[in-house]
Length: 447
Image: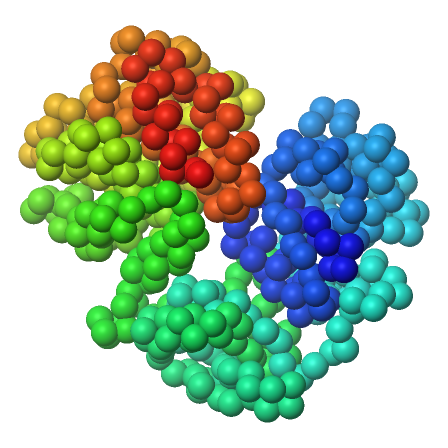
């Protein structure tokens, strides 16, 4: 962490919402150095390692009698902190002490306006040489444009501090090749007018100066493909071969083909194809990691690859709530404190989708085996049956490891800085019996 940068720690579980915070910081402060984490645990780990941050932007994390503020106080860290949360003031341990009467802390309820965010972080930073003068244009990470098909406002490329050239007109449909051409030329930011940004970025978690039009012609590429392109760039620095990505693309590029003639499955897959959240990305990333592990174990025959990819696509198809899809162990299931209905959905979704596939004429016993057991763990801490390593078949073990690795990569926002932490987690929880050689492949992927 550089003393010559404006160091910001962002702690937010929602990746797209975290993107909005990054957008705000990059447009408010020059020479910003941003660290992103997704949980209270990781926030504390970062602050235990270093208190050299100029600003913290965080969800309101609370664990029993400890919250983010009591933790900061216990470490004597008087770092300016903005909490952005759906929690009400009454749900804070002591809102008045920690927010109202504290000069270096502020609070924004979700959803929030971009203008409010910008004003508060500027005020919290105090007199600072890092604060940028307000300009007529705001920069947007070019990769954000892979998430839409229509720009709702004029978009510019910056040639110099005083010269901006319009490259996408308001209302124009743009192509993925157009966006990739900017990235290939290291044009990592596009710009929109300040007033447009203030107007369109109005709700937390929405990059709403873009729009997806489902009637967009095929040559402009659909939203699912754009999500895949974004994900490829995020995981591109890991040890994953282009061959593995190409194999997965050949199956997943059109999910509806995997329905094998079933109208019911076609409709389910069509719904999933329009999702760009955790559920969709998790399917794709699990496929890539599963195929890479198979290839490095020399288990990459066609039947195994097809089974891993199909399982990746189908395993959470009956889950609509991504918070339920993130639960992967008995401990997490207990901590979630779910209703009986939601708990039953989590425990049975693998069995239910396998029964659905069987009724729709898809017959693959290995597929069924993995679907039913994909939340088992080698230490017996999985569900629904609490199996141990020796009770879990090798191909199922590959999927279980790929599934957990995908989850951890997503939790850490695909940040290579956390590769060692992920490797330690996988070693501690999965390196048992025949899982051990699979986890060794994980180490190669993460290095």
